[in-house]
Length: 159
Ligand SMILES: Nc1ncnc2c1ncn2[C@@H]1O[C@H](COP(=O)(O)OP(=O)(O)OP(=O)(O)O)[C@@H](O)[C@H]1O
Ligand SMILES: O=C(O)[C@H](O)[C@@H](O)[C@H](O)[C@H](O)CO
Image (cartoon, rainbow, N blue to C red; front, side):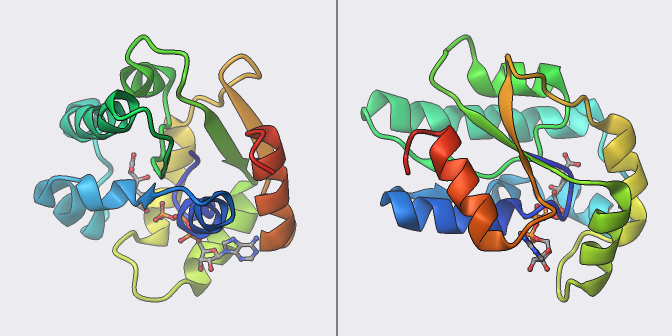
């Protein structure tokens, strides 16, 4: 979890590979209307995000029912969103990729070919309810990718 540009896709891909787990890109589960909105620089509302979060929770439940683990990326900005993803279970572990607005803006401005404009970063931070240690383990993104991945694997007891 983390705001746009925090490295969810990058880190989740590495973590999944290292741990031998399947990985799903949460952004690919957005309804088309959500992608269209973000592409136009319009922030999503709670109502826009709800069906998307429900779809991700359902996908997690498929893994749960199969007795399998997996890695899935999702911004998960508010506690209420994380509640939807947990859906009352204690087996959903969040890794919060934490970084400053300035660092993220720089990364988003240098990223090519992504639908999310850097202009939406401010609203991502405005929406973000940072998870406390009761909800997630935070990993600083102000370090090389490999170090972030090591931290995440350790926090998840996968390393
Ligand atoms: N540790 C890092 N150091 C430097 N650049 C990084 C690091 N991690 C990711 N990046 C770069 O930052 C950008 C954002 O990363 P990425 O696309 O993985 O973020 P994201 O959270 O999945 O974004 P979004 O939610 O918007 O899809 C990419 O260009 C990526 O290459
Ligand atoms: O909750 C949200 O506003 C969205 O999930 C965004 O965070 C994007 O999907 C994603 O991060 C793309 O950049």
